[in-house]
Image 1 (cartoon, one colour):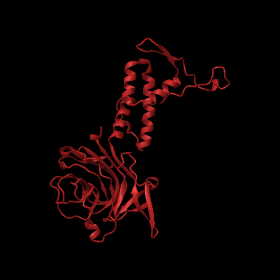
Image 2 (tube, one colour):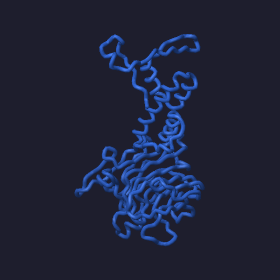
Image 3 (cartoon, rainbow, N blue to C red):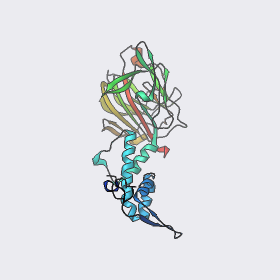
Image 4 (cartoon, rainbow, N blue to C red):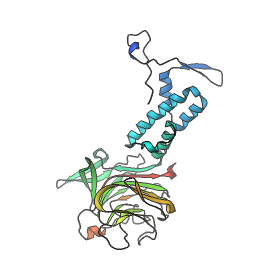
Length: 323
């Protein structure tokens, strides 16, 4: 765990006995020959403002700073995970705190978009006693917030474990702002959603976009609740390349993780890999449509006047191209 913050009180003060001893000051010698001292408080303050790569260089250059650097990395990692609302799996923790911090810093830098049905991150309006979603802030800091398109989805305050969601009926859509340039694969999309029947969870930005879809659909034979499918192939016609899992749209909440990586694509449902190693196509991603396909037209569900088919609580997107 991170070491305690050293005391700054004088040693002869009444409170000195109640605070941890900062230990002897550290003597540092610059290449120019100048010597100066740093106490524990100053060392910790400096280290907590360094990234993983800088902490690794500190360890390599000064053996006495290795343990303080690892402690600073551990504290920085905990703060980063808290901001991302994530936790690590103990059996997947590999390497020192600095190594793990470096990996999670890559996750942050890879963030393309992070949308969440959180009240503080959405702009809502009331109509006929219902809350409608006008827009949603991009929590990744990338500036790819989403706005309603044609018709707004409903805001449902208590959908899953006390958290809110957006309810889509097939013609209500949220669309992000366009990416500065279309992003090539690999791209990872994670969606926390509940799908009922033939439902598009997420797709590319607009009618001129190439398909980049995660959905319950494109069955080989019609089924009221198609299996989960991901594809980055084609434009308007049925895709030639896709990857299909086994989970069907039965109205249950799932965490969908789709790794679009051409011939090495993977799809995970609730952390379990359902399909891998198949080509999904080579399309690029220019933005996101949530709740409808990239054409933005009414889906078959809406045209058949069926009940709402999709609820989405969170969307995250990562692209290694951003590194």
